[in-house]
Image 1 (cartoon, rainbow, N blue to C red):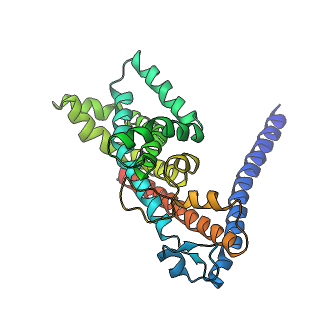
Image 2 (cartoon, one colour):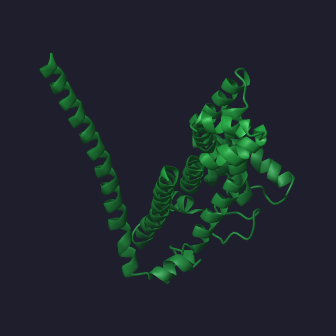
Image 3 (cartoon, one colour):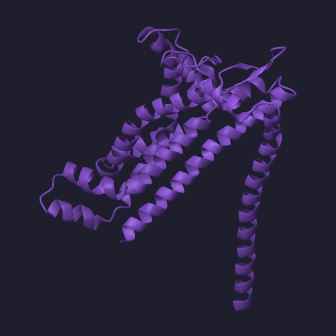
Length: 293
């Protein structure tokens, strides 16, 4: 019996190792493929012209333009605006679920959050066309297809990530901290704001950064409501094109240097996402060091 268990454990260990190696190999292959397809662009277009120019006219003959600065600004603009909306709402909802929601209302709200997480992005985009765009057109003004509409749709999409991470992080705080704070005379709000949130900040920050990555990499929803105009966004009501929108829009007909420029755009997006992941790891390590002091 002992030999059978050892054999099964060894088999499971090798299976898990193979799955881990497969994941690493997949990431490595995608990285090599993207860089191999995109880096040849810089033999024809300088890196400053590619990153700092707004001249995106790949089909112009002669002198085509391959500047993606407006798309970078559009991606950052939409992402920051969506986080400005979703972070306060998401963190507040997560704290409410962890500390205040009762047995009746809590499960209902959690089910609604889980439902939001499972809705396809194209449905969010259609909802944006039917509801968000008309509201933006009626209240702030403009044609409705704008960075503001994209930000609102993205804020709704990233809410489940921020809410779930906040709730789990606050729930994981030891009860001794809650009880000690209340025993010292702190109110419930003082306990939450002064004890629980600081103790759970690493998980909350992780949720925010993961939401940022989701917003930065989203394509379909923002493509439907953002206007998809290759211009520098002048404000919240201006039409916008993000990095992902640029890739998906031109990929169907791009060829030659134009196609290489799209892969180079994917490299820029890949670097942004990689930087976010590195930030998460550094934040988690700092949180672990502070908690062990």
